[in-house]
Length: 218
Length: 205
Image (cartoon, rainbow over all chains, first blue to last red):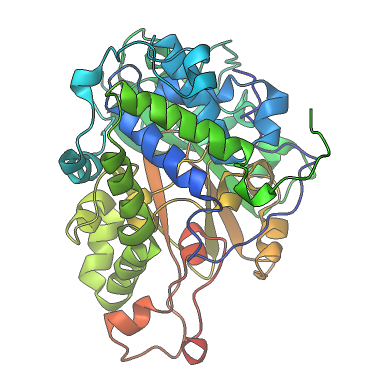
């Protein structure tokens, strides 16, 4: 979607402020948002792609004014409300009025280490790749209203296939509950001048990871 | 709206603290979340999984050419051999800086980051400022980190738009001959493994 998340290459943003690597959180509530968000993933109501779509679906004014854990929190509430697990009145009072629907899937403390260590691989059996390393491809003018992982700065651009990663879950369908639809995933490398025009840094190349439905042979 | 009578601000919860607490309380009462599991997740990423993992990987790559070669061919397996696996690191690729080419990693669309080797991303990595500028003007972004590369060095930016996660292997600093892996790892900063920084020089470690 052409949402607030799609900021790559946009002008007008400000300085990048380095921070010490020993700093993990900026407030205690951020820790709870991290933990609760990951724990709620175990309930099985949504996929990683669905949760990303919930975040980018926040109103742009909210998205740009929130810290990243603030974005996570608001998206988590939206996902839980959509799943029928919480309601506004419960959140306003800070008290449950109805039982949880997926309480049988609650993440147990002793299951945390295993769940985090397993992760959630996205590679799947799928169709053979149409493109090979070194081939030139052109990204499509792909602008769905729903979730996609083709950033706008890399639309309608010609680049070179640099790696073939096998078939992976396709976010454009999976985010919307329309199935994993695995398809080949590639790393595609572009010259900055192709992306941004003649004034771009001539020493710069940028790659994206792109699923086959984003690409045509150039 | 805010009124003006005297009260103790120290006892007030700020808005996000109160909202997050309300959500966690509701979820706990419903049996959807166990606060001890939340504690365990926080403890993992606050105390156990962080950039020292990645620094150990880089140090081994510097010290052991066979490991470096494995890391280049199959980073997921090479990194797993050191015990670093799982969430947000399921599919790893290691990219090696050279005098000719410098690598920089970003996720313009959200905050994708290799958690098992680097831990949670810093705030700047998730902020729109970095995400917008890293793919267009990386030299200006690097300058903000005190890094100035030769004008002839090519810059390669990796936008993590899928589930592949990238670890930058910086160049081994000069003057580190004979150092063991632990000493080498101390030179490897988190930012250098994103490509936003360079390793420390041995005399500065």
